[in-house]
Length: 196
Image 1: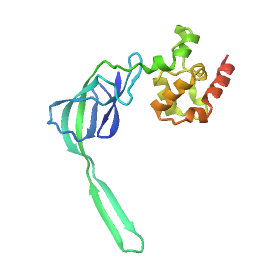
Image 2: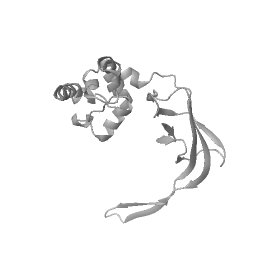
Image 3: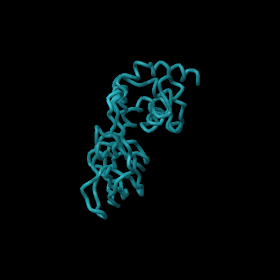
Image 4: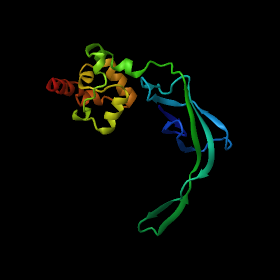
């Protein structure tokens, strides 16, 4: 089971037992903190995605230590102006150890919302079948994995997406009309027919 949390304006994928360095938190070493900005919970059953955060879901973590990252060198210059500046920067961080991912999400699981038409047309015993979605132009390895996490694993599911479901996926994955622009549904229909 894993979760995607937001801390300090950045997102982190964490699981129980992981250690992660986040932007500095105001907490003493050894203290327990509750991270309530949870974007995704997955790994057991349905994938739950917040809008933007999941209500009632928190990630408990223990503050291991505070520190500073490696120094980076910044060099600036302006040609023909005799301007040269070099300085360094070390970013502060807080190291956390993830203790638990808990609570119940109040949002409807994405799997149920997105793949409902495919579930009606396909028998339950073949729900674990995964097509190579990267055969669709516009879907690379990363997008393919994100679609798998949303429960979209076959060409048939993409071929039967409704406008509402397409808008939902666009919103969750920040596609901004990419599905319609690259004709995923038509491509998926052709690939599904070829597979038959």
